[in-house]
Length: 276
Image 1: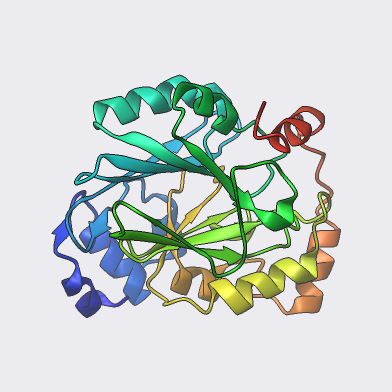
Image 2: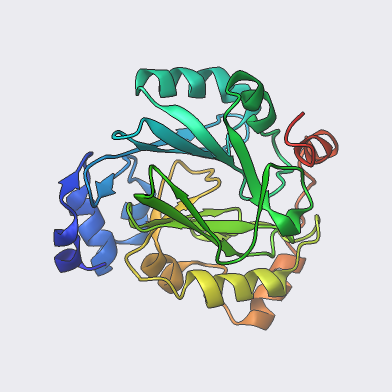
């Protein structure tokens, strides 16, 4: 999405248009990207609300997608320890959650989806069918989540590899993709448990995510260095893991030597049951 393509957006609800032009044009340096702290909210029809929250313990990003016209909102990857914060923020914004999506069955935190359903009876939980986890709705590749009286759509894209049930979600209204733990900023999710596969993740990113418009904003599931977003064009050009050849990448992932997540034995069983 070069600068000329940004003209189609009628509203810029937050700051950072100059920064986004630099990202889209590829004129920023990798160092500059690390220090972009603000959230840009581009919207086609002017009714969108967008918030990015961060859990300080797991460094998980939770995303709130709202619609001012209907008062509806969607949460992506909500964290149990942050439920009071998230509920308070939705109330402040005069929004009511109708859908809570988990991009996959998380191993480093417990989702708040199950608990939130007891607080908001109309809330529906979503996760990929391939995850095997409990949810009201199980998604398959290419399926569209239509909401806000048919004015908003999230497209589910199967992007397995970190786990065998990972999904990413494309929002054309905001010009972005929520990539969960598949594609991170200058990295990717680990692939050494929960049915993970380095080769599969590499193919998911290159065949599905890197096939999106280069200016698509990337909102990842985590970041450990204070970065909040990137673009598909930037990651396809500069991602230090995923720009390697497949054999180089597989060898790199095999030798990361990471310890298992501290909450693995608690989080995975809970998240297979919607966090309860």
